[in-house]
Image (cartoon, rainbow, N blue to C red; front, side, top):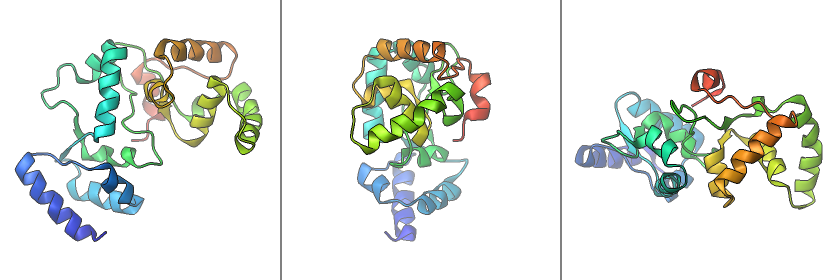
Length: 195
């Protein structure tokens, strides 16, 4: 992909629409260094519309956890428009728009740093199970996801088609077992967020 031509095409669309859009094919065709250049080009003054797959996810959140959806989008005039600085979150190596700064409802955002020593002791067995294509329990699956990249429980439940309340109960159980730290307030999560 010729990045200069891509930027010129997106500039025309930005002028017409007032925001940028990226198709899944465009996102899959971008390399990390391309995305860094795109963010640097539009940093601080450009909005992008969430990819269609992410909008479908947030429509699911609206139905499954309306309080969370309202905290994120309820008073937004520009619904599903976010800063271009979030573009790297939509690469396949990441877990999309992070739900990590809720003001009212509890946050359920986790990183590798939230895995406690007892949870880390589980990792060799979990990795062995994945190498042998052995089915993981849901809590093991979450630890495996955190081994790869940070994730919130809404994306986790949506990706694996799990009932959201079951996942929330699982988090409480993982905290009880000493596998995970659950920081519910956004001010406590700030140092773990790398967006």
